[in-house]
Amino acid sequence: MIHCKPKKSTYLILSLIVLALTAGLAFLLNDFYRSREFPLLFYLIGSSLLTVVLLLILVKMMAGYKFLAAGKEQIVLWMPLKGQRRTYPIQELLAWQEEEVTANQRTFKQLILVFSDKYSFSLSNQEHLGYEELKKYLYRKAAKKRVKT
Image 1 (tube, rainbow, N blue to C red):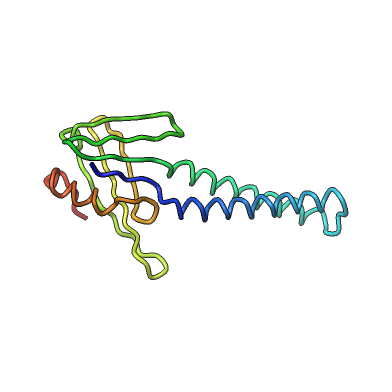
Image 2 (tube, rainbow, N blue to C red):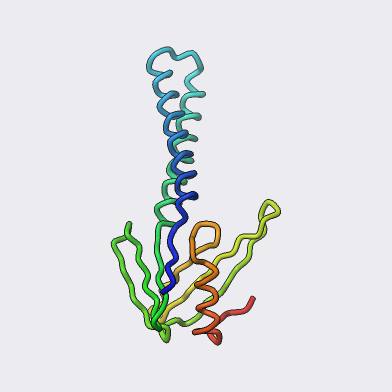
């Protein structure tokens, strides 16, 4: 059985960034409340910008928190934040594709799986453990359903 789960290091770093942004926002709002050393426009723009970035990172973290298990001729998807668990036989896999993106002189890979109910599921080698094992499993069990780019 192959298990693909989020990397703890990725979520640890993102959590530290969220804490730093939250501390910055709290400091900015506390400074506005106590001393108002800067112009009002600085506080408005700064707090708005910090809030938007904070929300974007939190949404990214929540959307990426998903698990996949493959083996015994089936694929099980689990998204705890959505409260969903889906089980598909390997025959219900319509297509799968591996995308490669080069950014900052590094190559990131992403697997996209599409099932018969038109549900698509994606995971990346940057954020999930077990990526290479899943790719090998898909080559063995569903090589004909691979979409070549």
